[in-house]
Length: 377
Image 1 (tube, rainbow, N blue to C red):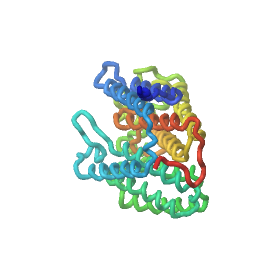
Image 2 (cartoon, one colour):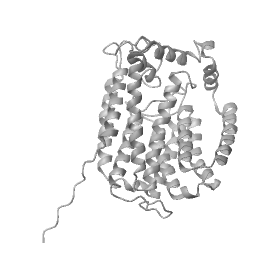
Image 3 (tube, rainbow, N blue to C red):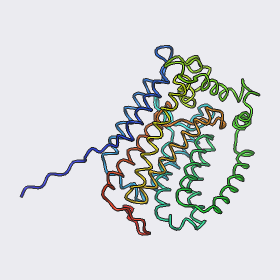
Image 4 (cartoon, helix red, strand yellow):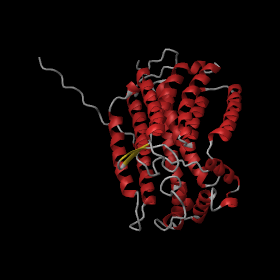
């Protein structure tokens, strides 16, 4: 008797997520390009974009519902802790931080993997206990999971990613329905932790950055230099910008790290206010689509994970742009899809791939809001 042919995985792409992400990546590559005038990171970033796109296609095609399982989530979390701890032992400092594993021509930042692990862990935890979130114990337990990663990142030290991880946890708590009383308690705890970090955890140069944030002009040639040059770049773009490749602050190297930590400022200088509005519209399309997917998610895990990805991207965008506009202290934070770097770009497209795959698997399914929700266990 002939056997029925096995069904092949069907290609399912969410173009409303993929196209804006590709557009943002290409705009970033165009902004960091030097057009033959010196060394450029654009060719390498184009290669990373190709790899990241393949990662998205692969993940979105396969069934990733196994990520809902507790052993998978805890393994991912445990591997992230191990890699972050290993950094402190074997990694060589880069710009004062032990944040990367250097593997020849490739550098890998474990914090990027840890973001995905934290999203999956919080989504798993809250999907099982969201109806009990009024119990303060669950806030402490989930906060403990996040705090473990945050402390390891602070030791590197990497203040930017520590803030991102804190934003992920706080955002996930807010969407889970935390009470105002508990939110006030968290605020008080955060003030205490911030005070301890200020006096015991921050390096002198990090405190200088925060102090210079209040009045960067007072130390233009020191701690306030980056913030001051970023504001000049953004303001000089005016309405239409100086033109692609004609950004004097970036191309003449007045603006440090214009291909990574200050790429928004470099973009704003060349594209102007109109370009910035187009850029923000592309991010808004991604955020709106993620919110739409979360609303129609088949399970609570899928909804929490998708909203977690939205919070991750939004935190990066808000902090990066806030730094470029002088609204926040300089912490060295990338902006999704645009900033130079391979590991964060792969993570971002992988996260979109997971969201797409979960949405594909949940099409036609009924979302169970009860306490006995199926989580793939």
